[in-house]
Amino acid sequence: MRILFWGTPTYAVPCLDALITAGHGVVGVVSQPDRRRGRGGWPQPSPVKRRAMDLGLPVWTTPSLRQDAALKQQLAELAADVFVVVAFGQILPPEMLAQPRLGCWNGHGSLLPRWRGAAPIQRAVLAGDEWTGVGIMAMEEGLDTGPVLLERRLAIGLCDNAATIAQRLSQLTADLMVEAMALLAAGPVQPQPQPATGITMAAKLSKEEFRLPWSEPALQLHRRVMSFYPRAATRWQGQRLNVLATVPLLPQRAEELGAMAGAPMTALAQTPWPPGQPGQVVAVVPAQGLVVATGEGHLLLQEAQLASKTPCRGPRLHQVLRAEVGQRLGSAGAGQKNKVARVNCL
Image (cartoon, rainbow, N blue to C red; front, side, top):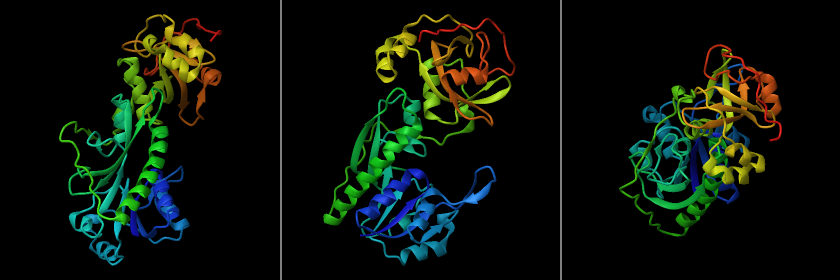
């Protein structure tokens, strides 16, 4: 089939590769315009555009598809049988949706109708969903409202972050899209309408959400870290500290934590840690990280990164932060300094 591929981030690249490997004729790629990236701030092509250029495919970009009449005409002249859309970043106007004879198909990273919209993976993690997945959806004018042809589920583990989940969903999207194209080529398909109940919207992420409010319960703070990875942040000694990995020390989930990280984590979860003010370090565990009090329960800070430093964890984390019991995350200064409490046996 003649496919016009629409995509922008790294998430979409495996799908483009899979369609080509499956023998489909990709007649072109549409992606978002080059953005300033990296330390130098130079304009850089999107991952999908870069991959398309490597493959020798024609690429089009536009800041506003709706207002780009010339591009619409150029794409119509390609006479593509189908449009495949994976994380493109713009809404296709009705006249574009009507162009391909076999329709426009979107690989969406959620179990529709839950988490329609821009950030389905992050919102699923933040909400504590146990499952996510991928749906291959027939596109229509509504935002992610179309009927679903294929769907696969994927479990969300307690310590899965948005980046690792996205990697798995990306490959799942590629596999399902190839399967969907085979179905389209074989004859008429009957995608199923989405349920009328259970609709939720996955709003875009905002910078304000990345700040960790230590007054929240440990489990919700952990979900923030996992959801907004690697941008969840707090303050330490007046510097920005990106928090990259945490574990909620929940006695009721000690066995689960032990299964993921070994017996020491089970012991940490079962330890009766002393109380403290939200954000206060109550213990230093050199092999594992810092035990921090929250609004409810304790959170183990395993991995973090100070501004202009490399990520660090375990003994290296303690060395870089020079953490002492009584100091507080989220505060501008050093905080109270007490004798360091170490737990060397874990």
